[in-house]
Length: 225
Image (tube, rainbow, N blue to C red; front, side, top):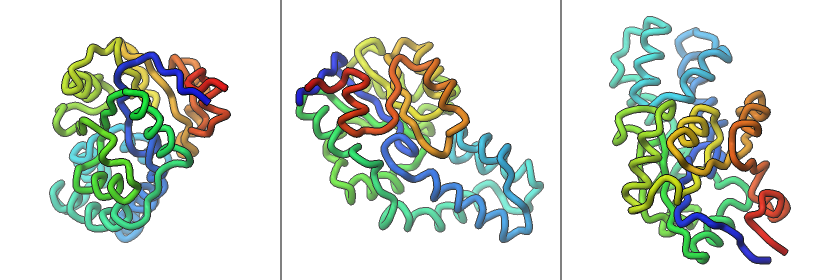
């Protein structure tokens, strides 16, 4: 089989797109709030998944009137989740092979994520794909979350490429929308945590990947027999 990929750069989201990690984050939310006698509802989960780490902590403090500081909330979350990334959270099935194929094809790879380097770098190292990426960009560096295209634009800039030369792989509607409006080719990646968003993602993105299996890649035209 032959890879068919016409863009010079590929910019990947991390959680829910490359790493099968969103279940771990949801579990952290449950553990954190349950310890305070607060039930977790879908509206909260939906809201925080679009936010940067500091934004999510500030939102949680304000929503539930917590006595902890934003900094203390972040520190507690980090203590709980760091070990999950370092030891357990896997790549999504076939994601590693796809990254290897893109790299071998001469596509330069960037990561554009709301996660933190001390979380994702150990996970990518353990999964054997860290060295494939030329650029790592976080929404904290870009100053705004993925409702805005800043993080993708910064990644493209660091790759020395124009948006039209890059494909952005994302699993959330806000990320696909902002990247598309900024001129990127967009690929929506299915994740079970956002099952309700799949019709919107299919309609919005230029291409849709149910997963990274050869059959799905052939369906998008990224892989030819």
